[in-house]
Length: 382
Ligand SMILES: Nc1ncnc2c1ncn2[C@@H]1O[C@H](COP(=O)(O)OP(=O)(O)OP(=O)(O)O)[C@@H](O)[C@H]1O
Ligand SMILES: [Mg+2]
Image 1 (cartoon, rainbow, N blue to C red):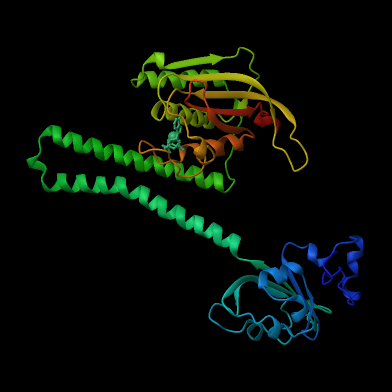
Image 2: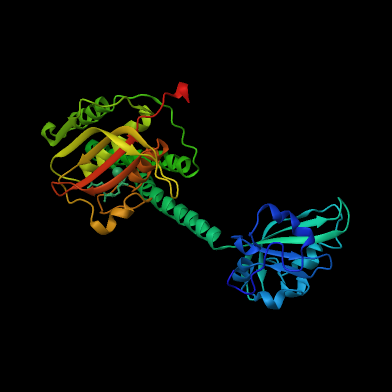
């Protein structure tokens, strides 16, 4: 402990109540990532750790020994003094603490505060008030990203709906004035835009499942090479030239236990991207791999067997500086892009299987997406 102000746990001169710390020798209150403030039975601050000093911007030496209400004059968002309001020492004797609250220090500095009242015995006098402090930055950041997501979604929904509304209103008002061909064209646009909204909503539902970690993987034996061929056939059936696709499957693939619907979704997105955003020939390679599973800090992941699928095209590719952004929500490289959710979902689906995906440059110069999936275990054996 280089800092002369650092407090051992138990705090200096405060041996008694903190003696349980003996089971964890050498641990100090300054090791805590969150702010910790302890006031004694008279309401004077006896512990004020490093994180508390950082979060409040107060000097430890100036607050130690001073009354809580004076050294840490917290107010709620309506400007009421929190210590007067909650009155830990004189308030309800059944109260055991305060849940986390967003409070302000003078100057409008926001902190998240929770408190526990340690009593001599249940309903007895308060021996100590233990207060936890947290900065609000992390929470602010997630709130901001939620707000941004809502704004983007609203924007994405508005443009197709504007067109649906515009065309239906025009048709209803002036039905007789249009020829059958004109009406058909308008209805086709309405139909396409309605499809766009439906697809966007399906993607948003996937995203909410991915973000909440609620994605269910129902494993069954999947013939991924057959799935690749099926996707290629459906592109050919809808007008792509058959020469545009090359499928190369290694004959020695291990069995793969995965969620067939999700594999279809992954392949569908990657092939659609290669056809829509790429150009030239689309090559799909399916190979066995010895993949490395997820690693923990300082511990490399276990080596496991799996399957790798590589989708390469001969289009413009992804610019080097954008490669780390292609898997983020709503990122799209050009005007031709869709909603920019496809690859985010693909990554989420692959990771739910314990696999991973990377983007690079294809030998022919286009984009190359390569994902690996561990062989998995049949659902019945999990
Ligand atoms: N094979 C590719 N070649 C060039 N650019 C690509 C390729 N695949 C993806 N991209 C770029 O990455 C962006 C994001 O792709 P992503 O699949 O996430 O969204 P999208 O295809 O635009 O929309 P969505 O899939 O939601 O309909 C695309 O808009 C495109 O600019
Ligand atoms: Mg896409």
